[in-house]
Image (cartoon, rainbow, N blue to C red):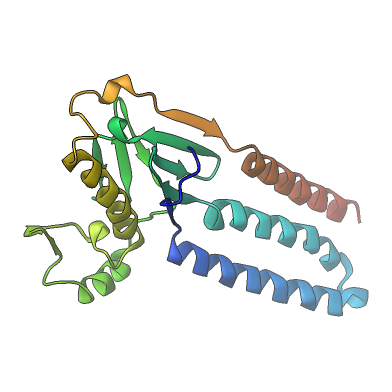
Length: 207
């Protein structure tokens, strides 16, 4: 996707909050291990494992996002990103988590998880009666008080604007390629994290 001053990026508030909580726990445990290092024995070998866990949280929860710009939608998931030109977008499904439909497949959006049962009940309390959009009842996942609903609204607003202005022609979706790119940084980080956990387990076993 090209540089665009009107580009907007969505990241899950829930995922980022959970990331911070998990990092705080890992940091607290690490400090405790270091503080009692002389008497903790093999506990020191947990430090690389905690570091690996923190890295996994960064890849799985913190990094995923949705970018909307003049060219289309970029869905950055855990291990890869998908670039979707506007004309290739067919439908947005928010029955559960957000899924972007293009010719031949539906792309799940890691950054827009659906709310759980409790989260859905809380989400409905902050919306118009029973969750409506343009006079139609919508699913819990599409409510604007949820991450999935916010991401869907961000995409839909730009998409419908282009469609209504005649810049997107119906029936030509298959003429626009949807590109999937492996995220080398994310994959490398997960691989290093796995090696750290494995090495830590091996060293503990040798003690």
